View 1 (cartoon, rainbow, N blue to C red):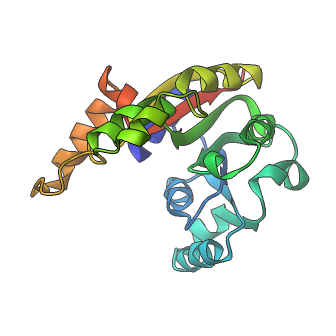
View 2 (tube, rainbow, N blue to C red):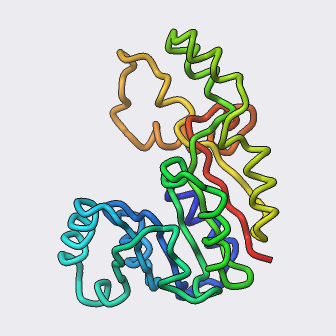
Length: 222
């Protein structure tokens, strides 16, 4: 997914521009650090104490220039309006967080307000449209039946939500198309890059991306 994000940033912003990035639910800070190393000014928000400790430890091991470009904030992603002014960021990331909050639409609206005009909103969510198929492939027939029911995180609903908050969907990718359903005895290639290339290709190609475990959605502030 890092390659997909880099692709969107490269296609949207001038080469060499130092972006203001907000990573909500930064976890251990791997993505935030990657962007700070690339020269961007990054603010990571996380409320889990263990994750915060790991992120701060990782940051402490970086060169001074990178440490100066990255700020770690303890807080809830739903409280971005408390910490930051609207329009403060060029890129806002929210990866693997929405499914853990009670009112994801409210969180999304708050994140969109943080974007400057032309800014990128990057989301990683479960793919509700693939629940039935992926459960069926694993032999979970009750889960497959339940997967047909309407639920959150379906592409059509998310597309409408992003349009409604002023960050309409620009493009989307599938993440973990094959790896979640591969047989347990499937061999890992000697060159892991081959596996990455397969997933990368499938994640941007129909119909494969539509049955991925996760969706990576990229919306832009008008």
